[in-house]
Image (cartoon, rainbow, N blue to C red; front, top):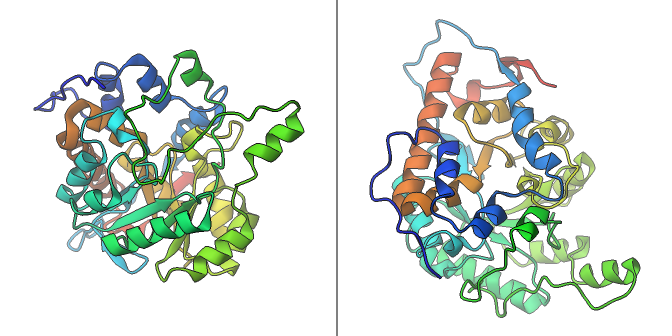
Amino acid sequence: MKYTPPLQNIPADIVCLDDYQRYAKEFLAHDIYEYLAAGAADEYTLDRNRSAFNRIELKPRLLQDFSAASTQITLLGHDLAHPFLLAPLAYQQLCHASGEIATAIAADAMDTAMVVSTLATASIEDIAAQTDAPKWFQLYFQPSREDTLALLARAEAAGYTAIVITLDAPLNGLRNRAQRAGFRLPPEIQAVNLPSAPTNGLPNSAGPSSLIHQLMAQAPQWQDLRWLKQETKLPLIIKGVINPDDAKRFADMGIDGIIVSNHGGRCLDGLPASIDALPAIRQALGENFPILLDSGVRRGSDIIKAIALGADAVLIGRPQVFAVAVAGALGVAHMLRLLKEELEITMALCGYPQIADINRDCLFTCR
């Protein structure tokens, strides 16, 4: 496919993450941009992901000691330079010829952990070779257990240190905006790590009951998760948790962490914002269970709000593909630097020297 050449220098008016989305419209075909930017159905959940953050008000402290200030955290036994990671995003060669390779180079340059998608357009081994920073592999269950195990074994051999299992998207949501734009995955864009390209077409069937049965026939169930847990010693993290009852059940069965997520508003419309679902899940799991959050994080202040409400770290989704479309690895590295600087400035202005200082008392409102 043809690409608009990425920028070699960052324009002076790119000063926050949303600026990359504004610029990306000039570098992406309209249908690809709509596919990436869109939410599901009427996009109520997509909108809530941002409006919910905006409702939350910070409560700063004055005259704090910053002589030992740091953004470092420890998560699942790994020291991370800052409490944000790159979320798994599929098909990054839609945006840049090097796709996930460029993103991995940027993650390494900024010492940022990266979660690599099952549906990456570069091999998981080649992506892993680009970064010494912590890297996790996001796994979709495959139709056969043999194929699932093959992906798992490759990730272990390539040096990935945790497995993120996405469970909230057993099928595509109603991507009406992408449909209106006429988006189709170009034939040259492939999920190269899979034995065959995933199929998302609807079955030839009459009647909604048959439709549901056929679409969900291969969706994983609790016994599949228990089986997978027995097949690896790596930490297992479940992505896509919104319901506290599910979160508690995952913890009870020995899962190592969860990601509170509504899939960036791309899967099921009508869900709450992830940040609104977070407090009840933290309450259900207690203080020490590892919880991450994604969906809607765009500012350093959003990270503080998420941590105050119970997250240990957050994941950054769409901004990485908009940044890679605009300026390749340079764009992603710059985007991460902007976020790191915003986090540090907000911590300083709020009087929170370290991540451990951030808790619910740091907020005025938690609606």
